Amino acid sequence: MLVKRVWIEPEPEVAFDPYTDSADVLVEMEDNQIWQAHFVTVEYLRREMQLSLDVARAHKRALAPTPFLALETPHVIVEDLFQDTIEDVVDNLMVLGVFESVFEQCANESELPASIGA
Image (cartoon, rainbow, N blue to C red; front, side, top):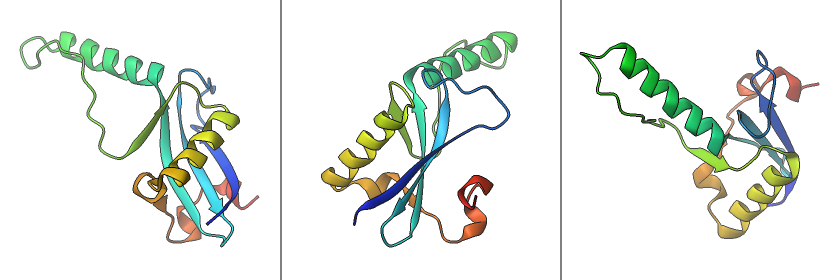
């Protein structure tokens, strides 16, 4: 299966910084199937861990002041979210044969961001 297109979908409500943020990545294959995964930067993870520590410190009696991050869904951790980096990671995942264990296939068009249809 060959990759046809790759989209990076950052959070629309915030200014996007490819060094410190997260984004959904959508991949269209040559068979027109769309796959989605969540990519985050190392700096994003550090910031989220600091936030958990700040929350714990605000609730001294209920939470131990320990930075942590519990990831509920698969995340791809990268140094930056530039197009070239994302495309290289997608290629590597394909070559390693683990693309389908990281990316989830979108079942229908209602699961896609509006920008895909544009």
